[in-house]
Amino acid sequence: MNPALWDVNFEAVPGWTGITGENGAGKTTLLLLAAGLLPPGAGSVRRPEDSLYCPQRTDDVPEFWEDLFFAGDNAAGRLMDRMEIGSDWPYRWETLSHGERKRFQLAAALWRNPAMLAVDEPTNHLDAEAGALVWEALKTYRGIGLLVSHDRALLDSLCGNCLFLREGTVTIRPGGVSRGLAEEERERAEQRGVRKKLHIEGDRLTAEAGRRRHTVEGSQNRLSKQRLDPKDRDRRGKINLARLSGKDAIGANLYKQMKDRAEKAKEALEEAANPHERKRGITLKGERARGDRLFFLEAGNIPLGEGRRLSFPELTIRPEDRIALTGPNGSGKSTLIRYALSHISAPRLYVPQELTPTESRDILDEVFREEEKLRGEILSRFSRLGSDPRVLFRSALPSPGEIRKLMIARGIFYDPALIIMDEPTNHLDPVSVELLEAALAGYSGALLLVSHDGLFLSRLTNREWLITRQGKDSALLAEG
Image 1: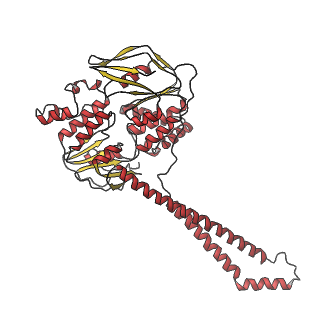
Image 2: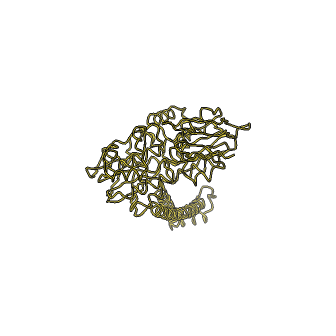
């Protein structure tokens, strides 16, 4: 089995060090190694004894939440107030939104104040207001911080250095992620310039070698005696003299030299090839459904737990609709999606906000059980969404970003008339977000998207369902 990381060597100092890379590049693996939760297959990791990992997933109540809740001092109270954490949250974990869970998870980790803190995707699931709360809280940490995130603004504002993971190796660049990406793009532009020059030189040498080969072949034909009249002593004498002079041998040597130079130029071009530049982008299949509507729901309300309810007006999704479902964390967006799914009969592709580890493994197993041709096509589309399929073969559990891409790559073969995605940009690297956005922009069916990414929604939707808070309850305001 190939390792997820190799030839990785770096030193982290107090302050935040950002870690970025495409889905499946090994970012979470690096955090687990740094925190001592995963032993290295080779080499060693030196870290403070007091190290803590704050996970990407929000399945379970934070291990050390009691330390924060029962500290009994003003500092703990201020942190809970800053992160807007309710006193009943540990006791109703199942009814919390993933954004609320993430805030609670981060607050418990920051309260421990370890010497080394590894944080995995802290702004996933968060609306703009909650994201600002988390940013302010992370700024207060003074230890050695490792921060995996696809949030460029967060990495730029907090990090003094960034590690860029590519193909299992790491490059360290000073400054935030935007500065590092600009430097990386400059280097790639230089590499493209070198490859262009090598390509031009290779073509020139190949053409010159071909010309010289043609000259040598012509000379060989001229020096052949096969078709000469046996009595043509004059012509035979000239051929013998030419052979003795060695001019044709010189021509043959020049051809061989030029051929060797052309082959070396080809090898240099292959060595300069960029392994990261693979084909990207997919087309989402699907035809606009016939009829006036895909979905209709009479006005009503849904329980949200703890005596709270979400009320909604009459709801309709038409074949041409592209709807943004928005609202603050905990207002009931995911609950409404799940309720609507039970009333939709049209062919659909649903990508939930989160999947359990068991559900993720099941999806991976189902893909590997597909007929070989279909499996190959699914993995090809997975690759074109910005991840390496080879990573799936050596992974017991795909990353959250990878499993989303796998669901999309597989789901498009069933020609859905409606695509529903709950926080689709969570867990995705910036390049993958762009690829997903381009694919959805070209999709001809209906869309229902839940997201806190305003730019993403503005480019893809033309209607909005806005959920607002009304006391402890929520209400959906549906635009016509």
